Image (tube, rainbow, N blue to C red):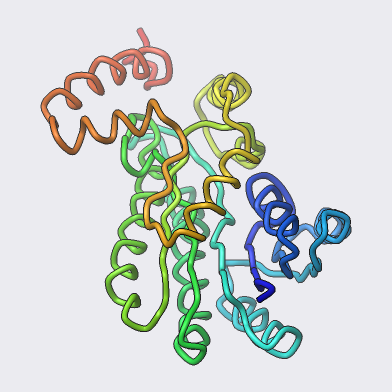
Length: 274
């Protein structure tokens, strides 16, 4: 059966890579985004890759947008098989310097955006008796590095929501997968909010240095969802660190403290940098 897929933030980055990955399998792929020009281009790329592309305006800060997408896809395709809650933003800063406005901004998109996606599509999945949520979190939600508190909290929230829904919805035939990549080549830093000098440039360097591409992460997601797996942890080094955290938390704490001192010296407040 041809899969029907909806991806938020699908006009660029990981969302686009995943849209094209599903297109290679002949899927019908709807990308929801706030960039119509990019969305129209990706719609054509989906079709060129072998799928059926469909772009629709969707701002994850509005539940009504996600409900409108759901209803449109029911009318167009008769339902949806996979919903990828991918849209997200980044921020950085110490707890004393990060503004409440930035906290509200990132939590509204990264956490509540995923909540809205799950809330809008769960009734449809229950009605269908099947469906899969793919929630894009981050290793930041598991590793919790300094000067990234708002981003860490937002991604930890996605992980907590995903683990909850994994238990809450599984007996309805609804699968949940939680994706936690580390740095990889994407455009996340382009919308990053930070008052820390050099932070955006440093994040861009880490992303460019990574040997993991958006296409590699998309492949891992496609495989994991097909296999019904919950955790998707594409980066081997960070996956090992996560295992250390789970099985030897004292060792992980020591390792993170050493790394944190380096980060605080480089990116902390002026007093800490001196």
